Length: 305
Image 1 (cartoon, one colour):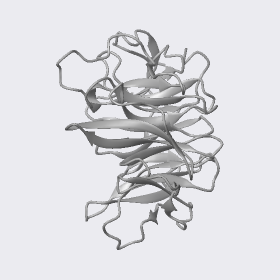
Image 2: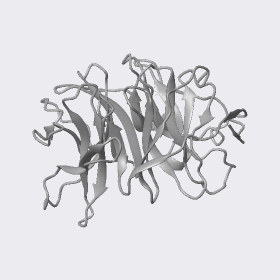
Image 3: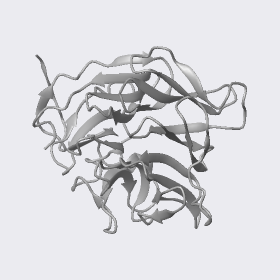
Image 4: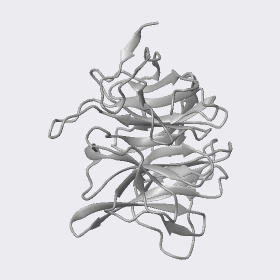
């Protein structure tokens, strides 16, 4: 088998040739596996500019509309996350609040219904394994700058986990034991291109997963492996200070921040929003101009730290 040399200060070791990508649907973004790994929920853009949720087989078979119903306008459903049981899918409703829906397309409703006003601009839900709560990002404007903070939600309560701008938070992923949350973030003003992977273990302060030069360790959209040993994420590393960001690829790093490995080639187009299957045998993602892709990647001993 040929080897691919990883040319980065963040990962200076050789890894096996990139796993082949199976492009299973020509359009879509933000894919998420069902608990049994046999289905994927994802989003497609409509002619009115909004997004709808769709479900298909993990091989791309039988795609069908989930929500909102055909012909609906004014509703945009994005960034879904299938729960650790088979019963609910969480998603961002109009970029304002978190909704859940049954995988058969019924019961779409706000997840939080407590008495206190919910945080504003909630997107990117990530279920905790016990399905009793989830973590999401709240985007707001404060003093003329965009701020973003993580909140843990239950149907009746919420708790702030991070305080912007230290750091400004992005897409979260809850660890399988529920004790930590990995997320995209950067210190100071919001700048997605300058994100690194952060981890918070409430009530402790957030910390960067990979110490060192933030430019060399750029990364965002993390997703924790079901066994808790590793995290996949998207990154355009290596990069140079002041250089225009290059295409994104999928990377894998140990949950201790060690042993980063590049899993996809990033020549010509970007790959974003990677997510493990619950069986930890596949990783799905969306590709710029490519649609929804899957790689078969059963994690091997020594891959992540």
